[in-house]
Amino acid sequence: VPLVRTERVHAPESYSPSDSSTTIRVVDPTKTAGQYDCIVDQGLMDAVIALNSPSSIQELLSEAAFAIQEHGIYVLVTSSKLSDETRQTLQECTDLVGFEWEFELDGISNDSQVVSVARTQL
Image (tube, rainbow, N blue to C red; front, side, top):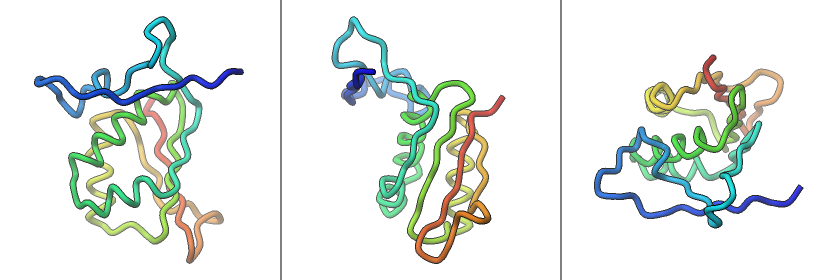
């Protein structure tokens, strides 16, 4: 299967972070955007969390929600446990885009990496 390339475009003046339809576009307008069953994020969200910007977190999750198929999952691998404040921010942002979180999965998470999963809500 050939790789579908997507690109990020500049948001229009009326941009709303909860409107994911304005954040990702296909390079070739004759092709549809890529849709994935699973996105594994190992490091990107860590960097965004470090910005301490809830709007940046919401923007990243909106883009992920746009690219994930119905019943898909977003796997978040972080270098340490998420703070209560970060969990709350992720939950608030994902409520807007239709994800449901399960933080720090047992049997997968350890001292060097913590795995959390957001599933699209049914």
